[in-house]
Image 1 (cartoon, one colour):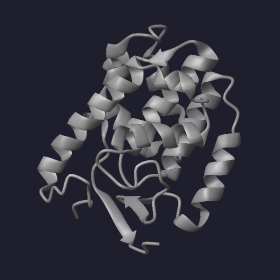
Image 2 (cartoon, helix red, strand yellow):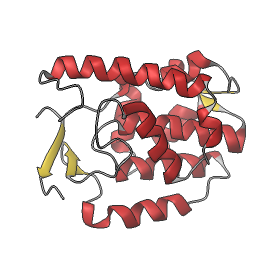
Image 3 (tube, helix red, strand yellow):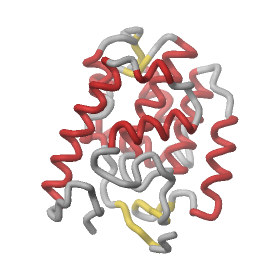
Length: 201
């Protein structure tokens, strides 16, 4: 199913290419213009603004909570009925230590608040928290993509794997644009999303 988009693209491959091109351009602008410095790390408002900035030119739903239930494989992300409450609880989670920050990141991934673009937005959100609390960010160049995706898939049950993987890749290069941009590389994307109940609101 091809997502309805502002570009009126009806081919999935073309949409993916344009989405990557535009979101990377917007991510670069967000970094260079200091937009990220205006956001409050760890808040859902910050995540919504990141998502809207990245995808606002492509989707009407940019920055808005999804209106469909979603799953990947046999794993269902938080159902709509509980999503807003879950997001409020995640926002309240502590973020003063590395372990707390990754736990918060994992929970936001399980919430999966947006219809598309969750991974890219949430990785920027994660780095914002790490930067504020620990003066560190993840050097995504050092994170093996396959290991990352597998660790994220297993993280709802056991998060030690993703904690160890990202811990090995921390850097103090918090103002390095190349390090930042690697985090939105869509080769880190999950594939195979499934809408198991299309109860559009």
